[in-house]
Image (cartoon, rainbow, N blue to C red):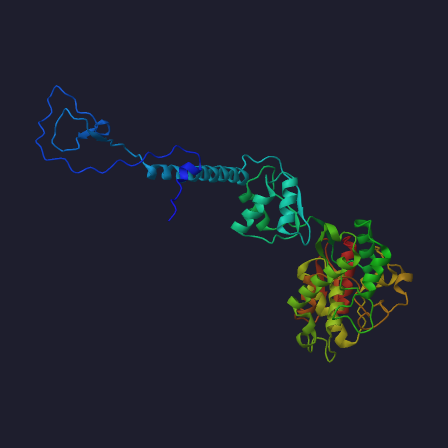
Length: 420
């Protein structure tokens, strides 16, 4: 078999000396104790001698065996393996220190506006964060997210990110999701006509196309709207709306948002079940959900305080049961499409299905957008036999009666006191 090469010789290291020859064991002899005056040397420096004959003659030259600590080929093998391992350990430690510095770079700086586009991957988000100096390394951030989890991240605008942030803080912000979109508040008060709503919307949102608003109003059909009708009067629910910044000026989205509010309130009040709820309230006449909405709009225009709403609804149903005209001046104002304090004789003679002075029964459609309290009153009229009511003070309180003479006296008294 060929002789195996010495690895230290292959790497250019000092060759190991040949092994010492084996000697027969020395004869047993008595070793006198060391004198106190003589120091004992370490065994690594002691040489043991013996002659070839083994007779213990001090005059003969002997062979020597050196006792060396950690010497030999085994120690050099340990050196050969240990040095690379030490280098690797140092490299790993340095890499860990570098990665830790990337994960937690130090004190955060100023705020940074950041947007995650729709469909953005974690890699693309990491690159964008690194470009804005929110994180110090895109590649380390990708590895960190895989380790910690949390992705995919939602698209949108984020708040709370800062320059030189720790990756843990960045992941927490992204996991929490984007900030709510900034909104514009739009107040639609109770009792507005559709024509007034259109003017209000176009003033509030100058970028809104008037033609687009007309189209949205004409092409939106709530479930309670009569078949074939294109009139949204009564359905534009009055409330304060939060319009997302990206939807400002979008007429269809605005109308849709108002329809959602109307459906929510009408369902909660039971408007779709109006016929059942109001059975017998107007005599033999059945009240449809749409007709109940018309009554609610009349209540909205007449009531000044909440305590009167259900009473006014009862007066309307009592008059419908008797087949009498309602005589509500607010419907005349709607017919002439003018807001005014006093109606003239000419106004009262306006030929319109909305003129409840001249026409019996309900008008053909709501005369405004009633709020929830008026819808509730129309569905829950107060018990009573009243046929008339008149404003009795400037706080909005009405006086109710079923006697015409009594009513006329109350009207004269209110005028004398300057109520109207």
